[in-house]
Length: 214
Image (tube, rainbow, N blue to C red):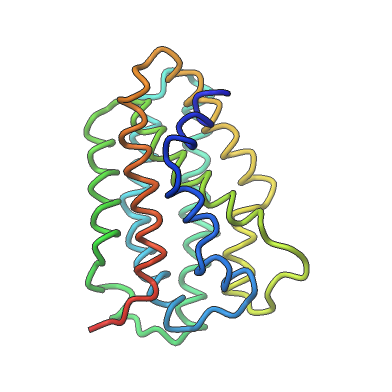
């Protein structure tokens, strides 16, 4: 078993609880309530700013020129098709601009941002990769549960497609291969601690979508 799969096993039951969360079930069926999906998307949109910084940190500290280019290319995806998806979905869900630009951040959003900031500040490529792998691989796994026909509504369908299209699969494979490479000689507990923490936060993030807003 390679390092990434050992880390995923260490993160159980939180990993599987996220991949098979009721939020995912309802999204894949196209039956998720608009207020639930809106709450999730608004929080995820604000997660993305720190995620961009995390990718930028990976560009800075990666020890291989080809790896730096791959991380840099992914930044263009976030700034392009993914950003456009959010703006279009906010419009489709009738979310006022003031609401998605200046929301009150939920606890798991704060927690994941703090973890990403810690990884950025560490300048530790393996630590950065751990957080990236959880954020991307976990999403690939839930999106790969999708079956045809996909949901009709674009805001549902496109969020699934963004996370299981071939380019995304290649991106996740790259991240896992990088972590297997640079983390091979690292202390397992040092890497598993943030991996488990990130997996726990992902589960809470899906839970958060169903919380009643005060």
